[in-house]
Image (cartoon, rainbow, N blue to C red; front, side, top):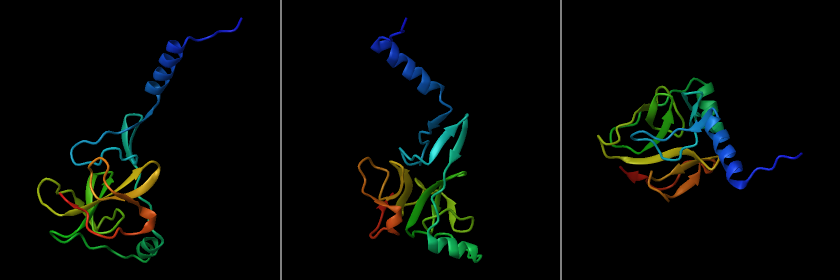
Amino acid sequence: MKLQLQPAAAGLLALLAALASPVVRAEPAGAAFPGNEAVRIVNGKRVVEEPPLTAAAKRFVADGGKTMPPAPGSEVFMIEGAKGVMECRGVFLSTTGCLPSSLGQSKRSRFWTVKVNGTWQHCESRAPGAKCEPASAGVPGGMGTVE
């Protein structure tokens, strides 16, 4: 005897399987970028994937290079890290080149480095439908959105 599931029962089983999955995407709290796939909840813990280093950044870091923190009012790259949203001078997280986000406290031009649809992107704002460019294309031309 073969067991046949009714469509509603099959849908319910799929929903239950999805709910039981230990990995979910974390929804942003506060100043985060909505839909950033680099931030997930795994077994109840927040896990953040950092953007990959470019070849030039790898050489710079390997040679002991230190990035200066962003100057007040300068353009920054907003990158989600283990400690929350950071404002970085470059397109990668750095202990010396990033500061905690000042979003909502100071206005400055901001690009968002996020993972969307499985690829790293530089987006001009957090707004739905914002212009994004692949991070592999390098540092985006033009200014990010002043927020």
